[in-house]
Length: 236
Image (cartoon, rainbow, N blue to C red; front, side, top):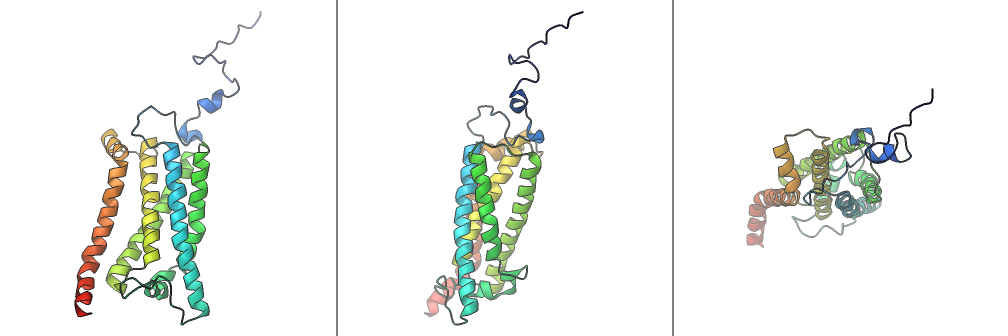
């Protein structure tokens, strides 16, 4: 008896045809982005890649400058950092504090190592590569820890040192969109399980919500440092 011919799939390809498995690859099996549903409000891979690349580059500049200043201070204790502008904008106290070396070495070295990784991932996303669910969840977990560290350092600057480090603020500003757009990406792709209503609020208003986070950060800084700065200016 002869075999009956294999029926073609709905796509017009026979099962096992070359390329079919790649087309049907689900996010959990290795795809970083499912087939887009045409919603213009969704975070596209291209936009996500550019966020990681540009914010990573900005963060690297801030971290590298701090690392250089820390090195110069080590070889010359009398060195005055370029970011030491006045009593309230000064990198020196932050670099000299124990909070500035939480792992036993200067915190900027963490940024010098981490931000190029973020930039590389951004380039990979821009090439159209699809990364697995476990990768994005791991990266989100690491970035969440980094964001927690940023919040701790902001608190330290405002309540312990009572001074702002200009290049530290560059790193803060760069880390926030890296963290936030990973949350948006994870919610949109279903890696973080939320209700459909919450998903639409986060995805549809991702830019507005990022702006709100920046406003809250700036307001926090000004509410705590503002009165002290005004008092200082009145005595000058």
